[in-house]
Each structure stands twice: as structure tokens, then as C-alpha cells.
Length: 277
Image 1: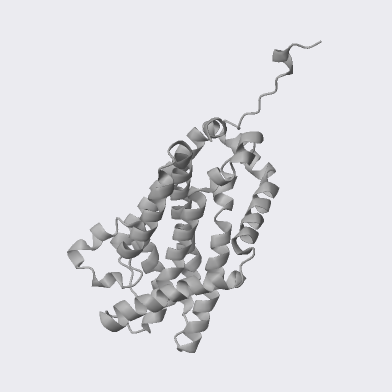
Image 2 (image 1 turned 135 degrees about the horizontal axis):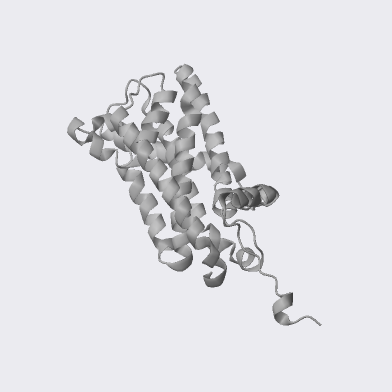
């Protein structure tokens, strides 16, 4: 008869990079399942269903157009103000929605985490897939609006995947930080909505970053979304929007720093999730 010690099986996450990548590949079906589940849950029992992914940015665009375009009469760089705002809403809505979902993703899957082993990284990454679907739907709508206003994008639209990747890396980096911190410090569930609300007003969504005085542009670019939003407008507005390149490179550096540091912190703390969640 074997002793309790001999019959005890301990499952640990792969400590090496190669083993960790192998684990991610082996659990790819779980990633697809969680992604599809989150997409279904988002629109389950919703009367309008997927249309909510269109209505939410449209309502924001209408408000911003009235306030900044009609009342404040801010410059629109030679394009309809609704198009200017919509091009910025794409990366902003992707970031805001992804951050909100990923920051609470570990707590939302507490039962799964406490019972079985799998790479915990799968949970925050899969949680942003529904936001990515919303992005693609909104992008199709934006292209339809540009056709209506006769200002379809030119060849620069090919750069959209690059700026999309940066937006995803920023959302994932922040999501890694906040999801891991949220497990130990539940106060972050209240901090994230404030960050999202505050970030909407300090990011160049309802206005062009060109109105920022030149001496403040580099400082303003400490908000990494500023460079990403400028990049989307540059790609989608037929060259009528310019990119402040020093600020863009600063934004790129910050995105990589946030992503890498978030990934490192998540990996270092994930072994304790099951114990304290």
C-alpha cells in the first residue's frame, strides 16, 4: 500500500520558456473554447445582439461630433467630423473594452483556476477576442461611412494591422497587470473603470492631437494611445491626418514596456492565483 506522500501528484506550470510555450500550444483548444464562450455570453439574451457593437461607438460619435464639432468647432482635418472621431474610436473602444474584460477575467474564472492546471495566460488573452470581433464589425461600418462620404482610404490602410497590433499589445499588457493585481487586491475592480473613463477624455478621440501645442506634444505622447490613434487616422483618412513621429516612437516604446513588464509580472505571480483567488 502506497503512502499518501507517494500517491500525491503535484501539477506545476512549466518554468522554462520552452515548456511554457509548449503548454500554450497544448491548451490551444481551451483558448478557442473560452474565446467562443465569451463571445456568446456577451450577446446572450440581448435583443439587439451584435448590433450593440455598432450602437455603442455610434452613440459616442454622435455626442463627440455635437460637442467638439458643432459647438466647439474644432478642426476636422478636411474630413467629416464623424469620420475623424470614428477612426479614433476604433482603437479606443478596442483598448477600453479589452482592458475592462481582461482585468476581471481571472476572478470570473476562479472556479476553473482553482480546480485544474492550464496556462493562466490563456484567460486574459481569450477575454479580448470578443472585443476584437467588435473592432472588426466597427471597422466594416467605418469603411461604409467613408464610402458614403466619398473619402475611402488609400493604400495607407495596409498599415492598419500594425497599429491594431500595437493597440492589442497595450490592452494585453495593461490586462496582465490589472488581472494579476486584481486577484490579490480587489480594489482594482474599482480603479479600472475610472481609468477607462478618464482615458477617454485625455486621449485624442473627440479631437485631433494636432490641436496640442507643439511644445507639449512629446509630453502628451506619454499617453501611448495618442500615437496609436494618430496612426489609425493616418491610415484611414487618406493622408489628411499626420503622425507626430517623435511621439509615435515614444508611444511604441511605452507599449512594448507595458506589455513585457505585464507579461513578466503575470508569469511571476500566476503560481499563487489558485491559492488566493
